[in-house]
Length: 393
Image 1 (cartoon, rainbow, N blue to C red):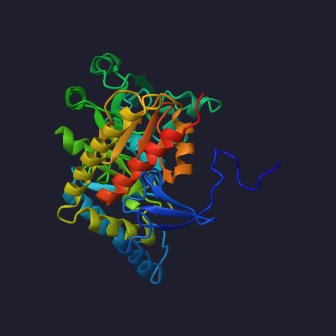
Image 2: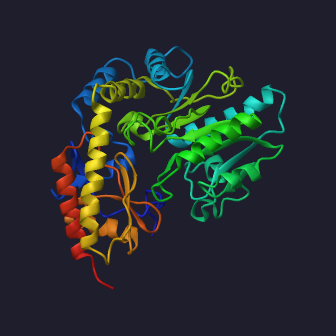
Image 3: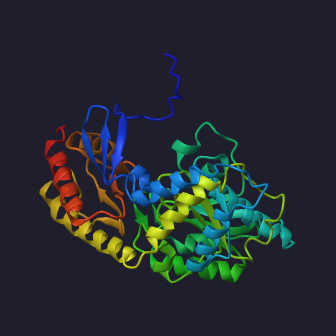
């Protein structure tokens, strides 16, 4: 049967028609507590008044100019990001995977202009997810992303995550950078250890490599700090950002130091839609909310409360959840499952809660960052009901 929409997604047979705060409503009037947030995108839930107003105001003024001209919203957002991060400059994209493509090109171009064109290689890690472009799937070892798309982009060496000795052994004359997610999302809500992150920074400094962090999912307040790297006491040379930075509007960015961006001059890269006025208006509004005093404290507090509540709930369902601590940081949390995680995600919708799988055996919780204690209580109650009613084998 021919379908008008390409069948590349295993979509649930649900039509979502409205969102309000932490909730979504389908075409049959059913209400769902949204603890998926569009896969960590809807940082402030649905239809936040400040974001809606920013988009409406910009939509009535100017939608698109291309990058043939100055875009004031880009300049303002780049300056604000410069003030609160390690970065000196930003390139704006429409998505996270586009930001990853820029990062790969920036790393290679850096060594090229420094007279080291042979240093084109990038070390990456098992179970990573950097997107679905050819460059991004080349940077991972996940067969489900790679099969059937060979030959892939050469120059990537994949080693075990959190294994510093493996990284050091993989560095050779062609290595130009190291790229990783500080907290793997699709890979099972697996955080890098402090020793690993500090060790990577030291190896990059020792060998003249660029450290590239993919904070597309774990950035923008998700872990309780504006970016996860802040919790490790190190800074990257390049960082990719997306998802939460747009609060639901498609936008991404690649942030770099001045040194790392040395090769990215006029003509080396571009994007027709990247950094368009609509996206910049929303992203600046998101940053308004993120930088409000006490907001990140709230995320950390809610993350601790959610973790505590989940760890009280999971022992009540020993046939569904593994007896191990809740994974993750801030409001990016995972529960190890003894049943297929996608089956549990699908079943949980019948109890009115939306979650996401992370691999085969981890249930991922990515609520809006502005949730309140009552939402956590409701989420745990609904997850517990889903565990009780989950079909027995």
